[in-house]
Image (cartoon, rainbow, N blue to C red; front, side):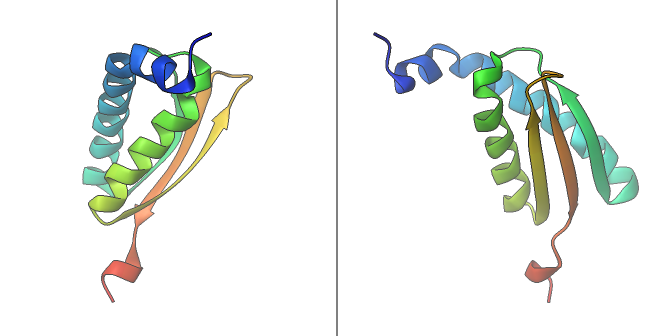
Length: 91
């Protein structure tokens, strides 16, 4: 039986690609409006890795001073993101 860690490792490259693609799309919105929201259709990974992917995206955004809320939408095979400026780091 495959372990959870082995399953994640098996799809590590695809998860990295998904995170990169999501961050690129979000970055474009943040540059123009200072916030970003919407659904991201999962493209490169099994849906069982969507929550991990969303958390990795959130972690990267938080490192850059953004708040990121997300919800995994299993039925539509998407992740919904809401990203906005983190004022707690600025005050």
